[in-house]
Length: 224
Image 1 (cartoon, helix red, strand yellow):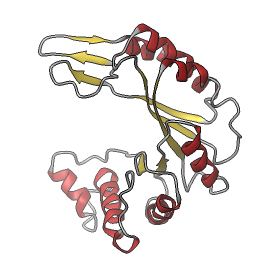
Image 2 (spheres, helix red, strand yellow; image 1 turned 180 degrees about the vertical axis):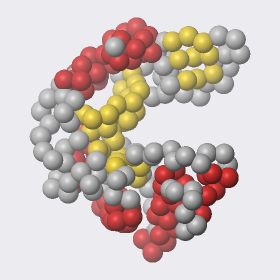
Image 3 (tube, one colour; image 1 turned 180 degrees about the horizontal axis):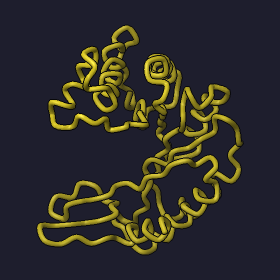
Image 4 (cartoon, one colour; image 1 turned 90 degrees about the vertical axis):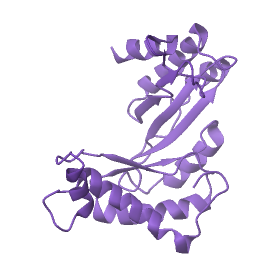
């Protein structure tokens, strides 16, 4: 589900089947004749399972009942067949509004239903500075977990030292609240200087060179 486009409920099963087939392809037993997707993986040169751990349902969809009821259909079947898989949900998380609505919806449903809620932030330096305490006030509980799956700050469409400092301020809040912010991922990682269609990137390259932006070194410093 993305934006206003939703598959009718009575036509959703093939999409759920696609997720189940994907998990079998990634993790299935290639020696089991009842797992054709795992056998296909072996035929393609990778007999060992990939050990897939996470599957996300949706991407930046509108946080409302249309997504929720579809997510529940995915969750029911994935949890039944592959209870070891950690499911993630996502929202159009550019402000407190949509993200909070989904967090409220997840209350009481448990981490088996949703391991973490994926929030995305592409905002100004001022936003990142002012939201460094975003997770300090989040209610703790068995189902209040966050995956900051996409975040990047940029000024006039480019990375800079100032935008990296703003990201670092926000990252201190994620690290300080690592009991609920279980995973993070900067976006995006690489971009070709000659074919760049995304402005905020950790590293840039051409045919002979590669260099990290200030945001890249930001990630290195935090990782160490």
